[in-house]
Length: 96
Image 1: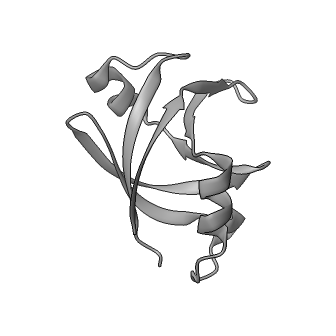
Image 2: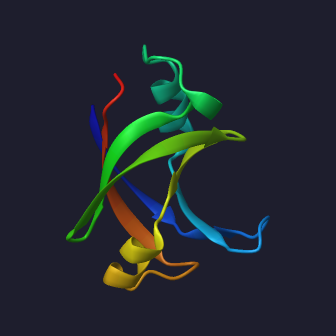
Image 3: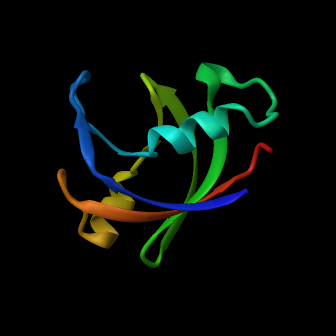
């Protein structure tokens, strides 16, 4: 399954090192939760993501009312992404 969405980049400061995320739209997240997928830790799904020319493999996690996509430091640096930026994400869900 392949999807594209826009998201504002948010920072999570619960740890010493900050984590940055793109959040999938709530309605899309609820649709994804209905897909048959193998059980994985934290309800995660394996994905291949792309922002601009940078592609990487990771997992999305359900948090609150939507899935979140962690944005690796390398991806943020290569694409010049900072907190508050709006990014367009091309996402391929591998676990369905």
